[in-house]
Image (cartoon, rainbow, N blue to C red; front, side, top):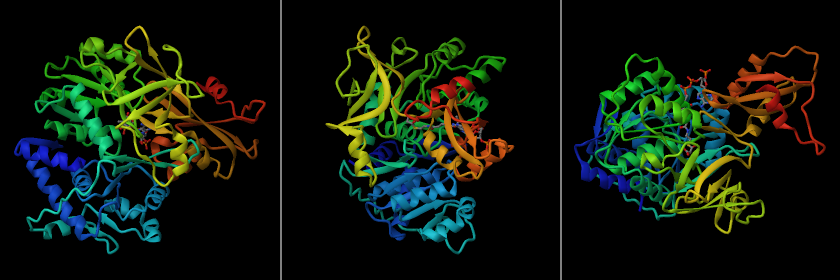
Length: 508
Ligand code: MLC
């Protein structure tokens, strides 16, 4: 089945019930269904066909949702792009994916202007910008006064629905191809294990361009027939107020969000009435035992931690029963997911021992877009090697714990950053000889991206602020170092490999 078809069927069932309340404007399931129908017509007018890629770089907005689901309805593939990606990053995603259409707004159109001209990609704006080179979607939408429904859902289960770009250990981003089967199987699993129903009201505070905000929270909520209260930005005080006012039942966040919510709650004079709240869910980065305990002490509620990744959607979850939510553990594999822990030869380790987590199931993606070698090396006998290290507790039903990573990766505020990508940019700075990017412990972001640089001319005064600005011109802000330290020579081992552990010890 096609994901958009499934959501269309839910829309028919729930009709006038509020589906999404975006910043106080309410859209019923029928409203959303009609908008998707109109956008489908529009995409067809623009020549979009089954298998075409449409890239979206937008602030959080309803058009994002309509265009994405309209695109899937005619067999298109959506590329959700981080709203903060800079021109060079966007250029790579558009050209690598061979996108047929880039949907953005006039603000970003102006920033990317020369790149868009160079690549010649068809660009459509969701706001009425006066721009001769771009298509103005509101103008076109106004002219659509037809009831024709072109949604034909021409996909098979293993056709690609979404390409999500993830940074790579080599610095080059890879497009993870996520199929309709991946999305739907995961969505159904989560509906069951989190007892998600049409009585639920989800407070949505995450970005829409990632697995967490788009697949798990939004698509999950639409599928369950529940109401999504959607805020454009995450603001801790507003979250507490909205949870109470709207009598929300579910919230999904990354640990940085819970950290900020707890800090805010500690300052509040009275405790919010959370009696309607069924479950707070955390993922995308490890939730510390300390934060779990602080949250429980303040609210009396135990956060439910689950484990997923772009390539696999959700893999494991703690139990819905609060007694089965253990701090520090990511719970148990979902019903449709097989999980093993293996050594570096691919042999299962003894229960309780640490190894790499490998995964198989309908949730596991199809491979990396146009990277057959990379795809091949990520799978052995159909098992996807996650790069996460972990173990299973033989005395607790093989409950899963994560303990580190096999590959170099920094997780900052729920976003993955591969050091190589930042090192590559920083090493193009005229004064930098070489550098190493590390993650240092950070109470707010979990890990803080930090660079250590050796200069070409060690006696020259270097300006870390200017270097950070240099990175920010080329990379989304979350990837850029929050601080830069200077060193004469980077520490290396006998093989010449940079000793990042030593750098972490030196600067943490
Ligand atoms: C923003 N900044 C970050 C950052 N987010 N820096 C590092 N890490 C981050 N995560 C930058 C901002 O651009 C800003 O730059 C400065 O840091 C301070 O930002 P802020 O105002 O404190 O951040 P805010 O906008 O409030 O965002 C914080 C956040 C956001 C936690 C709400 O990062 C967020 O929504 N994270 C969720 C990420 C997510 O959805 N991940 C899911 C991946 S899917 P300046 O210019 O102001 O200095 C996945 C699979 C799975 O992993 O299992 O879920």
